[in-house]
Image (cartoon, rainbow, N blue to C red; front, side, top):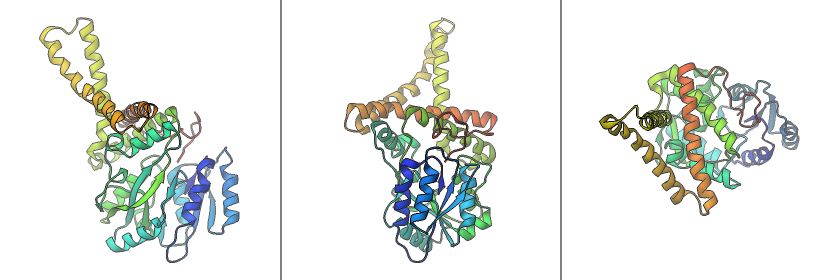
Length: 340
């Protein structure tokens, strides 16, 4: 579990891991980044309460660095990746280990069930759980068991991680997708089991959500630069939306100034159709699936385009110039610090 500034979530996350029942011994290794909110002190308290909690320092704070430090410190042949911003459902570990054995896969993952405590966070959770929000990836609500492109968190055979090289420490976002890509290229299977469920708590503010998705989109652009056609077609939808909106603005300006007139103006107006369709989709989804109150519906209508456009802008920048040292600052205000 990579950990950084998670005091509000860490104790419950650790409790759900330690409550897992399965055959054989186990341990929970926390890779501690340089937190400023008391998370490190809480982690030491939790380790003092239960000898199964092991602490390793992750001064770099990068997710893949922390994960690799924790894996190297581990003693057992099965690696269960967990997150401080999530909670494992009862039976998750035992069921995942059974699925590993049954399917002979190298990695098994289940459904990310996002949840929220306040209206904004609940709106983000609804977006995560819907095909409109994050594009319909299996672990965002899939119901069909089978081979998958990637897996949320993941339960791995350690021998396979040793073989393919564990997490790439040069990738700060999307490191899980890249690792699963290498696993599949090595001839192993990544498996999705909808019976497995993890509760995930998304970002709590609009600004932090936008920063998170911009950084994630930029790293996806970097992964497109590195792996090209290995990326799913669905990753290209947000940048295409953003480009279409930009083109419609240009056309509107040309029409308003008279630089585009007559038949050409009528023909160019076709660019408004996909934008109008997107607006109708967002409004309809907010009204029908945006919660019970008007406040929840308004937040849903605001959250969806924030996610799409922030991600799309980051993606275009990543494809054009790479990700370089782009990091997610959404959990530390404006500090340029790598975050989980």
